[in-house]
Each structure stands twice: as structure tokens, then as C-alpha cells.
Amino acid sequence: MAKSRTVSAPSNATAFGAARSAYAALGVDVEAALATLANTPISLHCWQGDDVGGFEKPDATLSGGGIQATGNYPGKARTLDQLRGDLDLVYKLLPGRHRLNLHAIYADFAGKAVDRDAIEPRHFASWVDWAKARGLHGLDFNPSCFSHPLATDGTLSHPDAAVRDFWIDHCTAARRIGASFGKTFGTRTVTNVWIPDGSKDTPFDRAAPRARLAASLDRVFAEKLNAKHHLDAVESKLFGIGAESYTAGSHEFYLGYALTRGNLAYCLDAGHFHPTESLADKISSVLQFTPALLLHVSRGVRWDSDHVVTCDDATRAIFEELVRGGFLGRTAIGLDYFDASINRLAAWVIGTRAAQKALLTALLEPAARLRAAEQAGDHALRLALFEESRALPLGLVWDEFCRRHNVPAGLAFMDEIKTYERKVLSRR
Ligand code: RNT
Ligand code: ZN
Image 1 (cartoon, rainbow, N blue to C red):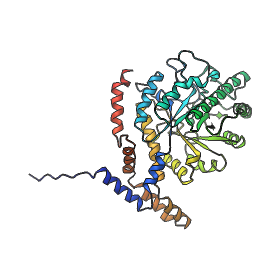
Image 2: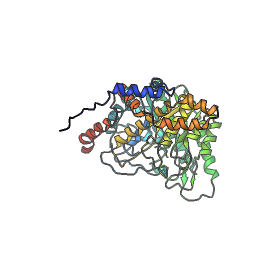
Image 3: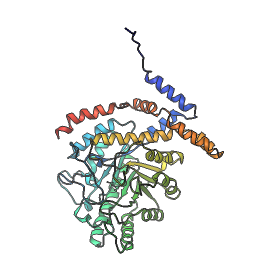
Image 4: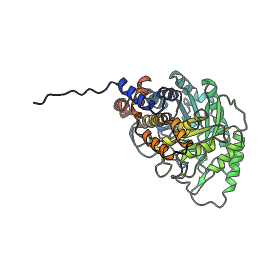
């Protein structure tokens, strides 16, 4: 019988030490990268937990707006308490301190619902308490201009002034709620306006809805709020299902709007452009001229499908741009996807950790050497450095980051999600 031989795996510390040396050999300071990663909050979108339904009424579902959650995986959150319970586990599985991005339809009306034009900070007080108790970095906010009887044929660009007024009041109320969050947490809340207004078939008049939209937005943003704790953002889009031919709030529309109205951030959603366009390439253009950027990190598969974010080339390129350009301080990072076909907590955790890993990849680039090669015109060396970076031991550094933040490294987070699925989700 052959003598058995035990091959012992290197201890975590040894493996991480080796990884750190591999990066150091290329001039990369791993500890500095980990410090920046720890200080970069990501705003988790509350709407992944219930397929963008919200809790205005029982069994509310997403309608209109050219956005769709597909899939019917069991266990979706049907109450605020369920959503919060799900989020509790999600945050436990994420290294670092993060934010929560709320939509107006997630108000806590405690049995006394008001229409969207009348929402107030008090309707979100229980969210504030919840987020504070968990030590979240802060809350972000969004008016919900969809899934409503008055949103079927447009909102802020609607031809009927009464309908526009309703949505202007809603967005105005939403900004006040966002500002109240910022004040309470002492961190900057982003309130982002996205509207679905558009048309399925070719319109005759593309201009008039845009003129109405600009006038409505001017009224929404008329009230000055404390810029120290609050930032307004506007989100453009190319098309949606049911709005294939025209979107009033296009890229050119909102970029022009943000640039001419002063202190607005522009929101770039990774699913809102032609599939062959690079979102990453837009960042350094937009930030030449706007004070701030909001990112909706998402993964559009052939269209704005809002698949779970992965650490793919497109996502890495986004974070590389933020790091290379020194733009992290001027960028609010939010996630925006909703996959109802898999465990929704897993979707949240996998997507957020993927975004964090993409940021870590960017922070671990051999930046100094890449810059030097480029400046010297040595494009072969630049290419070699890019290729070398791909094979560096990112996973070992990521695992170390998770360990330092007391969250499961590697795949272990899936065990906790599966247990929760068995104990909680399957009983819903
Ligand atoms: C829709 C936009 C918008 C929404 C959320 C729910 O295409 O991306 O950001 O996904 O507000
Ligand atoms: Zn978005």
C-alpha cells in the first residue's frame, strides 16, 4: 500500500501574505486598497427584495414604466417586516458599512395610507430607526413615478397639467424626505428622479413632452435644500419594454438639464444605453462638467434587463474609471437590478459583493506602472500589465477583506442564505 501523504493547504495568513507580495512586486499597496474599499459604501436597492412591488397595499406589484422583474422564485418579502428581516441577513453577509436606497412605495403608513403627493418624512421614520439601529451609513431615496393609476400615460411630461402637478408634488415631497434622511444621518442622501415617460410607437411630436418635462423639473427642484446633506440626481434612459420608440428623459435631455441647472448629479444606469456602448467611458466625460455622479450599477443582458451584477468586464471597467480618475469622492454608488428568478437575498449579496470585488480589482491595478508605460508610449508594456493584472490573486485579498470585517469569506455566505431559505423564506 502506498504511503499516504498529507498536503496541507497554506494557512489564510500565508496565502494572503503571498498575494500581498505578488501585488507589491507590481508596486501595488494592498493595505491602502483595502482601506479605500472599507470606506466606500454601496447603496443597496431595497426593491430587489420584493420585485419592485412596495407596500402601499397588500400584494402590490410593479406595473408600467418599461421596467420588469421576471421570475417567480418563492419567498419574496410581502411586508415591511419581512423585507427588513431579509435585509438584516444581507447586510450581515457584506463586508463594510453600506447604505439603503428606498423608493417612495416602501413607506410605512401604519394602516393610514396617503397618496403619493402627500408622503412625508414621518412615513419613513420606522426605516430611519431601523437603519440607525443597524449602523447603516445612511439612506437614499427615490420618488416612485410608476405603478400608479396616474402613471399610465406619463408623469412629469404628461399633457394634462393636473397629472403633472400630482407628480411634481410627489417629487417635491420625495426631495424633502431625502433631505430629512441626510440631516438625520449626517451623510449625504441622494434623491434620484427617474420617470418612465415615453411611447411604444413612433410619436409625431418629440419636443412638447420634453418641454413639459423641463418645466416640471424646474418646479420640482425650485425648493433649495441643504446641499451639505442632500444631493439631487436625474436619471436618463434610452428605452424600455412598452416605450421602445421614444423616452422623454433621454441621455441628452438629462445631461443638458443637469449641466444647466446647477447642483444636480447625473445618474448613469448601466442598463440605459445601447448594449454596445460603454458606461465606463461616459464617467470621465460627465464628470468634467457635473459636480457629482450617481451610478446605478446593473447588468443589462441584451436590453435593460436588470440582471444581478457580476464582476464582469463591464462592471470592472466602471470601477476602474472611478479609481483611475480619482472620482470615488464625487460618485455615489448605487445598485439597480431586480431578479425574481433566484433567491432574492442571494441576488442582493452576490451583486453587492461583485460590485465590491470590481472596486477591489480597480484599487489593485498596477496604476503607477500602467501610467508610466502609457506616458512613455510603451503600449506593449501597458497591454502586458493589463494581462498580468488579470491573473493576480484577487480572491485571496477579497477573502482577507471579508475575514477582517467578520463576514464569511468565499462561498460560505451561501450556506447562511440556504439556511434562511429553509427556515424563513419557504414558510412564507
Ligand atoms: C428604471 C430605472 C430606475 C428604476 C428604479 C426602480 O429603468 O433604472 O432607476 O430601476 O428606480
Ligand atoms: Zn436605474
